[in-house]
Image (cartoon, rainbow, N blue to C red):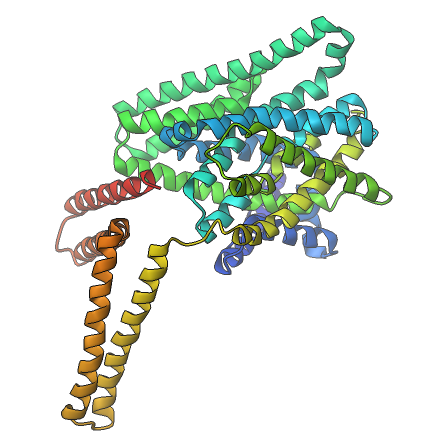
Length: 529
């Protein structure tokens, strides 16, 4: 590839980032899920004939480019970032629903969609089960961004994220077996069933071993360094190295990344990372994941416009119905024995099982001569578009309808008292301003000010009673105040450094102390969520 081509690729990537960043920023500003906004805008751009964007669209929507960017470039980063921040304690506390959904639910969905695709959609057996594998993978990004905006319980978010991390790995394994080995296994009869089962176990086991070994090795390595830029590089090598090594030996790269990142983010963080290092590694991958997700969903929108749905409406509608039924069966059947989850939460798990970029990247990676490839492209793209737009936009109203985001009683009482305090405080300030402006005498002003001050004292007494009634409310307020106190301390150090009152060495040491206190405060808050 010559220099001109490299220059063009860089310009294309930068222009794509600009578009994605702009859409993401607007979506976040208006408090809407940015993945859905990106898919919709990407689809609109793809459908419109905009001369300046045509080279960009043609470059991005090449199947090989899309597949490389999603699977090799972004997937390890997205999986690694999510696993890195997921505490073992959260997984342990929710292991029953996560395992039930990630394994039992994924297999149920795979089998249901596979057989339904064969009998009702007139797909060949390999194509039907490839479709089943594609529709077994879930993408929680849109749902989790909505959860944050409406205040859904942390446990529900952990289960959805945990399910997605593990079922992505399982779905990729099922996809590869269905696409490249299913026919030979069927031809071999019962021995083929054994071969298929062994292949399934081998791919997953090797992925676990590669991820476990690399996660443990890089965790041990962090003990010998207290240098967060270097340790960020370690995490990059871990995520991409475990993925590529596992794939090179025909193991599950997805499972390798998830396991390696979980070990690094928990065991490695405990034995070898300072609070400053943990904060900076998390911040680095949070920015990387936001950038990757923004580009991924914009590219999905652009890629969807390539499909030709003429005379395929019946096939598309049937596929959407089958996938929705399969997801319902996967959730409600696999979680029959999980009594700790209410039926309302199960409804959200069901409707929140969105399909995303992994499904599209996998279907694009099918060989050109694969029987039924064009139909699979149409079905996968249509289901993903329906999932992200229809389900994604309706999940928030469903949460409100079911009352899952209903605020605790303490929050409502607190907001009422807080509103009174702000009213009275601003009233007193307004009267004091008016006193000088309109020459109102002290006798008149004091009489009314005193009445408002009495109201404020009553409201403060009510707030104190509320703190006694709900101690956790006071604790949250204290945490917020402490956080802003640390920010103020950080600004004070910056000012002293700028004015050359203290040396940069002293300033760095003080900033490190402040950062470590902030990390402890954040970790303590997350641990109680």
